[in-house]
Image 1: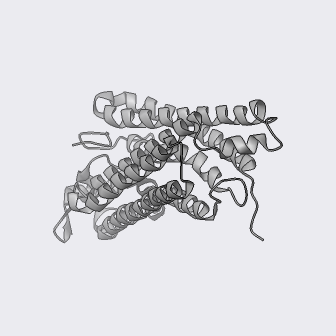
Image 2 (image 1 turned 135 degrees about the vertical axis):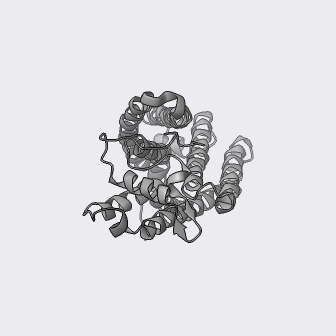
Image 3 (image 1 turned 90 degrees about the horizontal axis):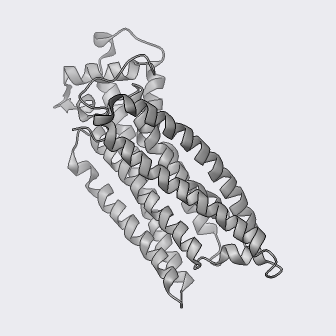
Length: 317
């Protein structure tokens, strides 16, 4: 007998966790705003991007909580399973709006991670060509799936296949970006001749690991994997079986916003560099200026120094 996790309980747990992550996102967003105001002319793009992600995440959690009220207050007595039937109905207007916001947050968040990978790889378009195509495929398949909700003769199997494609492509995109970004950072750290450049420090290796996790969006990649796994285990109609999928789906807009916000905070607080100059390699050897910049970025403690370079923007030129 399979695991039974009713859809009503899944949404309660999911929206509770989403509210928690929204609170975390709010705190990080406010810190990001404060630190970005120090150099707003150069950081306007990154701040604007995070603001859009925060608005999407806030809209999503607001609609999600409204659905809970509708399910457990307004429609709970419609039948013996009024709340379950309401939550399982994906074609109602409020759910379509929520899912449209969800899709937008997913592809926009993926796009930000693609851009950061692009910067880490010294603006090499060849590296991000495939991820860019995959982000477009994610948006097309996601909006295509939600668009089917408007069909009065909705075929849930076809819509599920489109949604499965969207989740699979987004998951693989994040895996690729994680490998590319973390691999690049690891490669650059190995290229540094620490003995020649600086005195050994005990915290530098740990800083590199933390930096790789932040820049590569590793936590988002793990969440994407769990989301896709639960999607494959979920029933088509949501009325029976394991509906743990909805726990992850309710949290994803928040997580997709937290990831780029952490990257921007890492730039603003001196953990890492905003531009490609700190990640450039000339041939088989380091550019000495870039190597020095990379080491300085890794050694800076938050709040004690500013990153060098012309810009603290996620899109610096």
